[in-house]
Length: 135
Image (cartoon, rainbow, N blue to C red; front, side, top):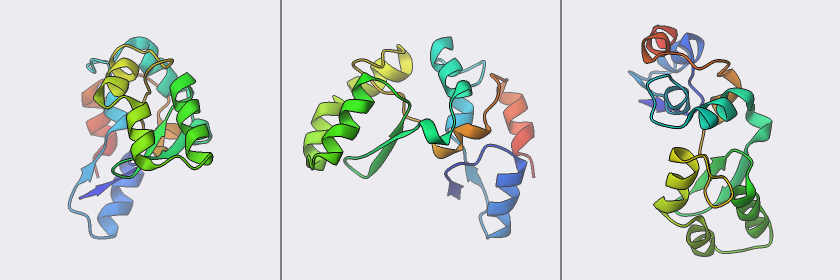
């Protein structure tokens, strides 16, 4: 399995050529019509590109998030040398993700997405995404 930034057949073909037998695509499915996230979150994903992402260290590893009050605070904490535990606490655990992803509240939550968002240009159906990923 390969994951990370895979949003279309070109990416799927590339990882298959490298030996992957399947792909795990996340952000591209978050922005589908069928996704439970609010339309405001889907619109932010479609409007964003990789340069918009906020990157910060936390447990268990790194997070990428769209701009917002909380994600900007987390980046500032990371740059100031906060520990991964401190960052994880400031994220609010799953509450922070729920507030951002499912409620669109980027003041108290965050919208976690991958680096491939620059290739997401429209809110489409799951069927269209699957067809786009077909090798």
